View 1 (cartoon, rainbow, N blue to C red):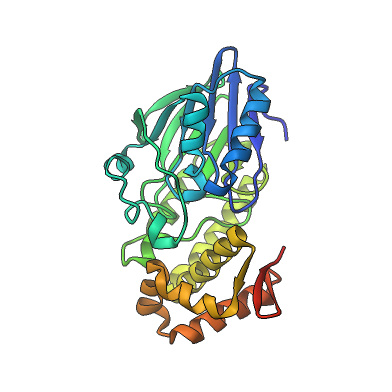
View 2 (view 1 turned 90 degrees about the vertical axis):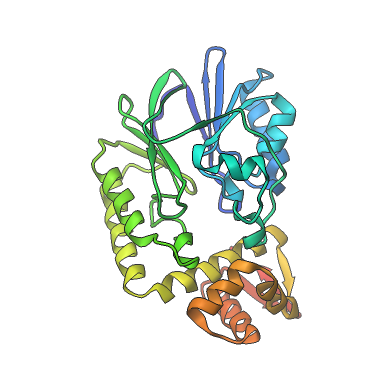
Amino acid sequence: MNLPSTMQVFERGWLSSNNILFHSGSDTALVDSGYHTHAAQTVALVGHALKGQPLQRLLNTHLHSDHCGGNAALQAAHACRTTIPAAEAAAVRRWDQDALSFSSTGQQCSRFSFDDTMQPGDRIMLGGLEWQVLGAPGHDPHSLILYCAEARLLISADALWENGFGVIFPELDGAAGFAETRATLEVIAALDIATVIPGHGAPFADVRGALSRAVSRIDYLAADPVRNAQNAVKVLLKFLLLERQQIALPDVSQLLAQIRLFRDTNRRFLHLPEAELARWAVAQLCRVGAARVEGGLLLNGD
């Protein structure tokens, strides 16, 4: 995939989001910082790429833990100026881990600070290119995406992947999310894009195909909100498994009972006893090869 020489994408998998590094002369910046447990690796990747030059700026498309979990480590290593979505500023100031989704999902994020904010309509310079900041509610109500008209590039975060998009979290809390996701896809469809750099997965050029698949996906989920709830339970349990690599089977039920988003999603949509919910979620992950059971343990799969 041909990208401007001032850009480099670190494709990180699914526990950590992708990181996009910009390096134009003395100007350096990173978009999104990965997950807490990968923070040392993120610092090493950035340090190696910059060859000793400091990282001047860090920006977050949104504040889910897999996109901002390396913030604190990068701030400690580089004293970089940090820019977050304006709508999240108050929650970060008071470090409200439930509002920021960390405690409600059972995920980790070291406390970080910020220096300024960005919001839809802003224009910023990264890698010698001008980027337009666009709102991308749906997966997260405060999520932003970045579009460069000159290079026909979109940094789409979790609003658009090559095959789908991130869990529609607002719907799990009783807020709107399906219509917002559809509207975000319409905004993306109206842009002249040659390459998308998603929050997870490799950059891709088949924008029309990705949008078609995403629209079909939102149609499917919106037709029955239980589907979004089931997907969320599977994705969140897989995230915990990616982080821990193994969970004792008896502990799965306890985990699901302790973490608020699992409890609330089950209460609103699934209505299953805790043990049955755990058995269902484990079976779903094993069925698609995302996990396996051995010796009383749930083990991470490919």
